[in-house]
Length: 179
Image 1 (spheres, rainbow, N blue to C red):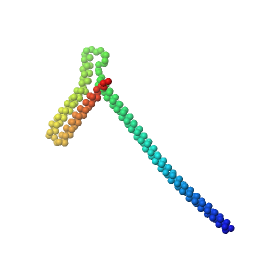
Image 2: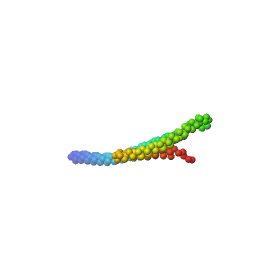
Image 3: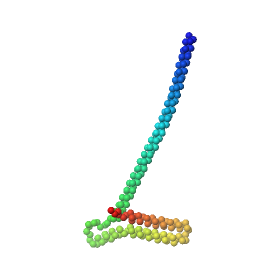
Image 4: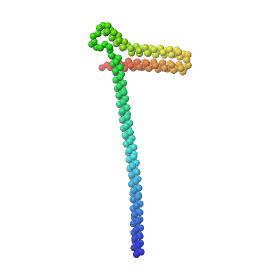
């Protein structure tokens, strides 16, 4: 009987020991599975970050494309406005094919001539006026503080350069293209 009890006890102990080993190895297996899952999750997070970066690059690219398209539309609008201003300069008060009396024709020719003369006359006048102001400012600067005189002369030079650049650009920009 004692041997039966020892057999039962040793069998139970062996079973218990087997169960403990089994639990221990299950624990190690679960631990390894968890480590693997952590690595998979880290990989998925890294993958998501890369996808996010890629999407952000696409969004940025779309923004750049949208800005480029907007700039192109603004350039087209500016070109069309410039073309419209050229057409306004070409406008004549004597419609082609219209028969008018000599006095009416003469008066409308004077109007067209005056309209055509305004821009070049104004350009020349402003350039002469700016040059005159520059010369006068240099003479006035003789008795002034050097800093104040420098500011006045610099302002006059900048104004003269601005007027010259504007009028020259306008003149060359408004020439019709030769085909």
